[in-house]
Length: 418
Image (cartoon, rainbow, N blue to C red):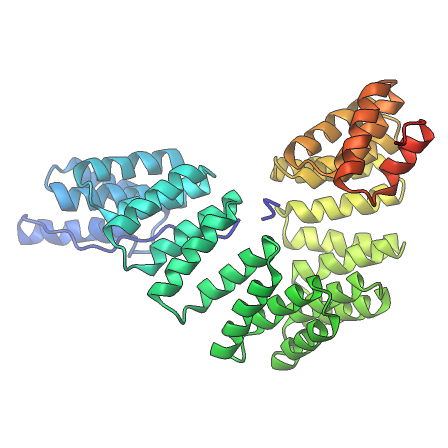
């Protein structure tokens, strides 16, 4: 996923702007200053307008003028207009090339646009100017991680921890990055350290449990999930995570019991409701599953994952057109959602729409080449009579995952097993 991105808020530049007007004029200008810095609780449009008025007044030079452009850029960023935001940050840096907040804010805007390389460069400039500010290092690490460059992300987390050895956010993020990179022992060591610093950190127990489960140390993983629930019995998240653990262990009854508890604790928690819906769908309880997933979508109407989950239930129920509608929505919300393309390809394939299925399988493989996507594309190629292409995809899938029976069985059926 891009799974998912970490949320980033544009920082507010709360700098006082000097004025040289008469007292009556100064009182009037204070209002614009407050609006421009975002202190007056105004809309982004009103904040930008106030900054524009101050810029156009020609009363400010250099440092203060750079701050005005930076604040207007923040306003544009809050409104989602990142191009105009970046133009203002560019202007601020032309006026004052050492304006750290403009680098930080432009980095945030580039991050929001998923222009990761430019965001990394901007945070690098902020680090150059303020090498002791750990927030700049953590920001760059976040971008590296979003880019999938875990080695550089871990390097930045290392640097952050040199600046602040007790920074649990850096330990947690580094542990998660170690887990993503497959180094479970180092991930567990980081979560151990977080727990040593704060024995009541529920997230640390959840994260360590997940790493332990990956390592197949199921007894210790379960103990951590249990401890997280003991520390905060009114939190839905540990129940969700323990339910996913039971699901992974092949115990759907215990999984569903935990999901039920999560929904009871937090009936308006979309994650809890949706995960229960997925579990019910896997049990063939389609009506109950759809009720939960409808509810989850009502709670989070812009969550692509939930549409994808509901599409899977419709697909498994044999309602392929309804499934495609949900996958369409998921892809509209997240255009690089490889799993949604893969699942929509399956729905088209099952409905006999092989050309549409092929296009989606090709897109899924392009976004995330894996054995499942290639195997599905191979099966579709076979249906369309493209035997050589089918064999090539199926062989590649079997190489990536020798345990994938779908590819192996298809090759055997076609007399192509080597």
